[in-house]
Length: 570
Image (tube, rainbow, N blue to C red; front, side):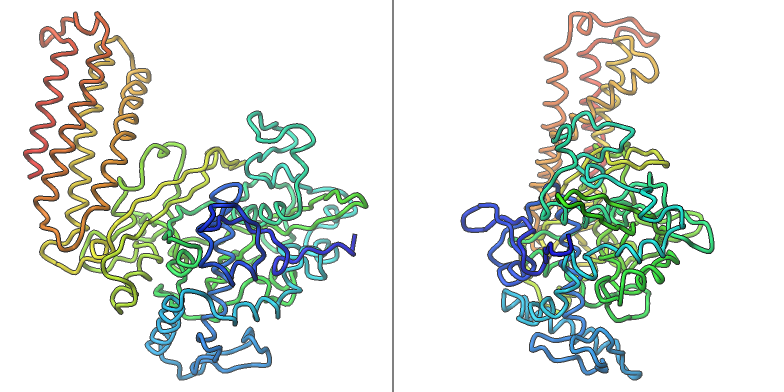
């Protein structure tokens, strides 16, 4: 099958939505970068697939524009080597970080003002086109047979036929192993293991980012190691969504890393001499020192064997887990601090937190203190830097998006169970408020705390109702949680609309009082819905040690608690 060709730079494989027509279209890498301003969004099989592909696109842009300005000139603080696109460039010994910051911000601003990417990106892709051939001498995101055999134990070599993974496992909409059938799959029978090449490419990229830990084969290493899940799988991702693919890529294009790591030359996986050369560095499990390498990091060494009829047998070997402690080079995650060590790790979502919307964790995404805080996501820090340098419009809405694939909580499998998508829009002047006295983020956090206090009042109301109905222990908590989830579900849209309506020119108190009044009305209406659907037993009530208790008394208690908490919140 050596005559087969599929090159990501020229063959269509990325699914997009065209802005003017709302039609779906498949485009190549070169087409996408030429016309990114004409496409509204990526449109793959899953949103997490779109995120994985977006990070690949960002790796290309980060590599190019961290070396060259918009005119195609190498920055003065880099010394050019023999490679025309700077893969072997080195930092000048006397480089100045302020100069790096200034130059990369200028490049970003010129691109943003122009509204499209420079031709240098296309030239870069043409130069490295052989590294984007899915069937080439250096197959894209894969190892050759010789490389694979040299990386795994002899008894796991390709000719032994062991350590394979099926297409139906790589497809994260199916994620079916040979031992556990996926009952509610979008495909059935033999069709689970069939897909066109363009879709396979999308899933291979996704799989490297969202892999479980069921693989039995590992690469050979001097020390034992835990198999890596995909890097994105262990983040709580956050990104900024724009009105077009161009704007989305630009808003997430971090050209100057404000983390604690020393500045390093960007080096995506395809710039390594070979898959084996990449693995020799990757097998340590150390955090990459540059963003392009992190965006394109592998969780598995994959090798494809193709039959004469085009059937693929996929061999897979696990790589060591990448260290994520204080990994501030990663810009697209929310962080959680360890109370004992003071160190930060990505705040991974779980099945227990599925119902908690993004806005309820506002302080994880937005700095609610006027001083800088290292736990702020890197993309937010980058936007803050752009705002401070007046490179983005003062009065405009930014949409923060969270896209997550949640595993089953089983440490030995980590199989996908559900995909989460959430967003919230906030005015850039509110997000980066400079008013120390009436600092909007701190006031918003206070409003959220009060809103969740009202939510707790409703949960107590629901729990008392369940107790009156005779629920016991787990059944009682489950009943209260179910009604509470419905309460917050109905609250999501009104709160997000209120948040999006704020500006840094608003008087804070009137806006907050308006929300409190809306919250009171909403809470009372939700309580009344429960009353309206109550049974004759609820109306009759029961006699407790405190006297008669029925649905009307519970409702009066709920109203009293809501009014009391709202009064305290003023």
